Each structure stands twice: as C-alpha cells, then as structure tokens.
Amino acid sequence: MGEAYHYTCPSCGYEAYVAGGESRIMMAKRQSYQCDDCKTVMDISTEIVDPNSESGAWPDFIPVDEIKCFHCGSRNVRVWDGITCPKCGAKMIKGEEGTRMVD
Ligand SMILES: [Zn+2]
Ligand SMILES: [Zn+2]
Image (cartoon, rainbow, N blue to C red; front, side, top):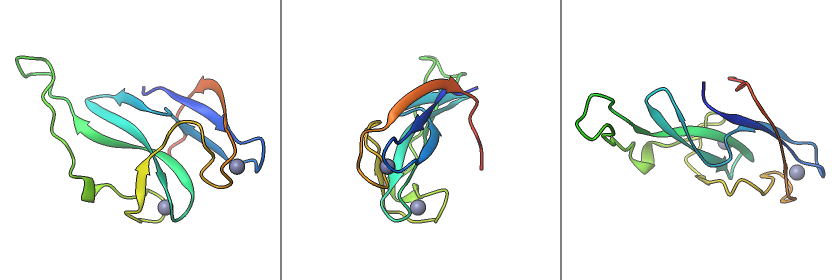
C-alpha cells in the first residue's frame, strides 16, 4: 500500500489523498503532481523499479510528455510542492496517513 495523506484546504475545502511528494507503491515510484487545468493534485507513477536487477533498482522513467492528469487528461501538470492548494493557493493542512482513494 502506498502512503498517502489526507490533505485539506482550510480556505476552500478542497481535499486530496496524495503522498505530497515522492512515494513508492509496489514497483513504481510516484510523485505528487498538480494539474493547472482542473486544479487538482494526484500521485502519478514516474518510474518503475525492477526488483530483479543487480542494484535492486532499475529506473525506467516515463517520458514527461506521457504524464497527464488523471481527471481531465491535460498535460498541463507539474510537480506539486506538497503545500499549496491547487484551487485557491492557500496552505493546505496535512492530515493523517490514510488509505488511498482511487477514483
Ligand atoms: Zn483551497
Ligand atoms: Zn486536470
């Protein structure tokens, strides 16, 4: 299970379950991104780790132009800073670690 936290925005009420940075789920590394079009944050897998390689980690990066928003399909996404609300720009509150809500 990948780690994710319940982030809430005290200003506009936006909520998200994301790692807020780098995380790992199964064999994939994930990074939290924000979409500048639909103003959401999400975790996107950016690297597959091969457990059978000698070093124990064999990166296979997903090209940047393959990364797109889960919600609207936009490629106008960028790494989220783990703090700023994508909707209103307020500072979000990092809550408890929780089960990832897959939508
Ligand atoms: Zn907000
Ligand atoms: Zn989007």
